[in-house]
Image 1 (cartoon, rainbow, N blue to C red):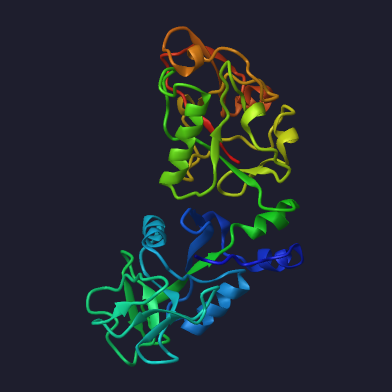
Image 2: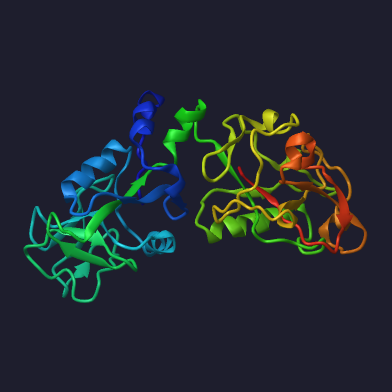
Amino acid sequence: MKSAIKMGLACVAVIFAGSPTFAARFNCAATGHDYEFVDKTCNITWTAARDDAIASGGYLVTVTSAEEQACLEANAVSGSRWTAGSDAAVEDVWIWAAGPEAGRQFWQGKAVGSPTAPDNYANWIDGEPNSSAEDYMVWNTGGGWNDVGITNPIVCGYVFEGDPRPELVFEHGFESTPKRIFLSSQQYDGDDLGSATGGDAACQALADAQSLGGTWMAWLSDSGTSPDARFAANSDGYILLDGTLVASDYVDLTDGALAALINMNELGATVTNATKLRTWTATTIDGTFLGGSCSDWTSTSGVGRHGTATDEALGTPSWWTNRGQNLCTNSYSLYCFEQ
């Protein structure tokens, strides 16, 4: 199991000043860590990449499971980038040479070799590793691993790994990492969810599909429950997936005006289509049940209450959650909140 980097607030400002661009970061549920495919000048040395990752508040990636590998592949960009793998210390003894696992062996031998405990995992390209002159591991396009020398013209960056978004703690003045919000890319008829907690399950499934990590619930009420009853108390703020501040805490979220519209979906795309920006809520501005829940989200008969994430919500702040009502045959999105 990966061990977490422990960072106090005293060092957060330093991390923020040199951290990679947040918009490129993504989180993997397998580890709870953030990752980024960092672009640098081609031919950057492994040592320079290692030092840059440390200065950015993390380390070169250590891929210790198939689940972590799959998450990286799902978010990867093309090109070769450095990882923490190396057999520079002892030929054919491949270890993670950076990060919490520094010094831990994960592979023995060349191409005709084997993974070692405790990871028991590797993803070398067929025929790799293959050279005693190539002591450092790179991530290649497609996710395969390869060994190269300490510098190589095809290597144009590195894969960053670290604790989730420490720079946001500093940027917004919170005591710990704020909670994330997204607008669901999926839309639902009035009878698709079955209940407000069915909305929670829908949000969780969307978050899991993007390896966002965390526990997610829908800003959705029915006659038996509401966000005010289900949501965990939060004093650390709410942000969109790109770090944009929406509210400073739960009280701020429910006082009427938001600092920004909730118009980014779980894919990280800003939604501009007005129809897709309508959201089923049945929820008042204070997070309680408003009524109009399409028979507790089991029916397409009657009307349901909805909000809007369009610019009109800036003019009438409560409209983000209580814009009006419409037929339950309509397909609307959900607001999904990390807990």
